[in-house]
Image (cartoon, rainbow, N blue to C red; front, side, top):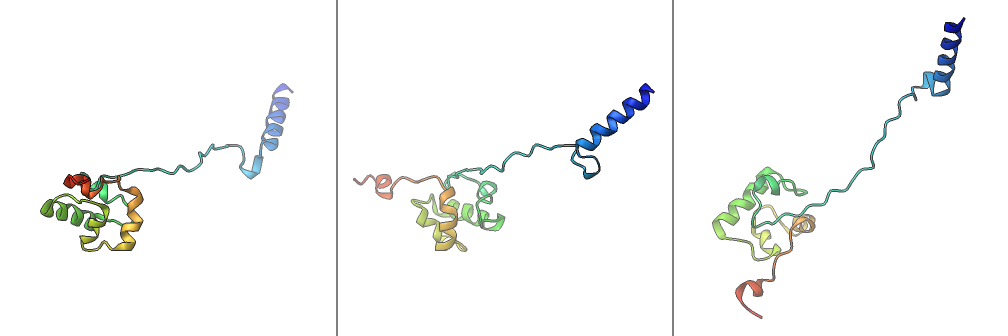
Length: 110
């Protein structure tokens, strides 16, 4: 009798908790997080640059090769000299680039 009472109580609890609808297990899902990062285009290697939106491995390697051959970029507009990066692509990646000092500050101007 006690076994049947325990079994009945267990079935009742199971039905109240969701039973056939499968709501017995509640999974806590965290809210999606925005991950913010910035890259120094004069220091980053291609794997870091490839993480930028719209920049894949090929274009990232092209940026590094351009920088290695011609020296550091003086400002973000210089990146447009890399084949495959135009005004729209620059606009897309610019929020992810670490701000650069002004070109005249680097040249010693005032």
